[in-house]
Image 1 (spheres, chains in turn green, red):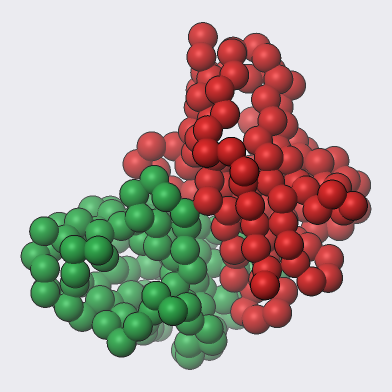
Image 2 (spheres, helix red, strand yellow):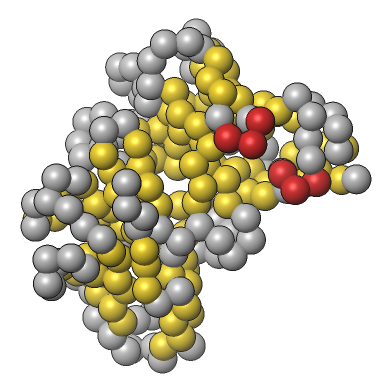
Length: 111
Length: 114
């Protein structure tokens, strides 16, 4: 099974700026998920994505967040106007069968 | 509501001693349970899972976990701890109702001292 790769590994952005986090590869036949982990704390579900559609989202996933498949391979999480409290590790995960594979994460630092 | 609880924020053990990291769950129906480990500044690494079958599940790096339906627990164990086992451990349960997302416990930091 192909690994789940996330880019960038670390991003620093100014408050109010837009950021795009990327996750590859992606397949039509799998569920994909985004999770967030504020430093050293609980891993929180953000959104699940299947067949080019959001299938479930959490309360955290408000209007500033969006997910897309811009070119059929990348799977992106966009944060439109970042806030200080968006600083966290963001993990993409692939679900298939009874298993899940997580990417290595993107550490987002909002200053 | 479906949930996972890890009652201990931190577990301290001496190298060579057995370790247990506790996890209890609350789900409707039969649970799919997982353990992940996270080393500092790293991603989540899969250790083991319980779907069905034997209650004792063996996983990576010598870890095992015991599924106990009556106690709704899925404790992680290792007979002899290593200093390199020091990390943050997460228990998770699959949400069977919706899109199969994982619901994580709050994590337990394991410190193994030489």
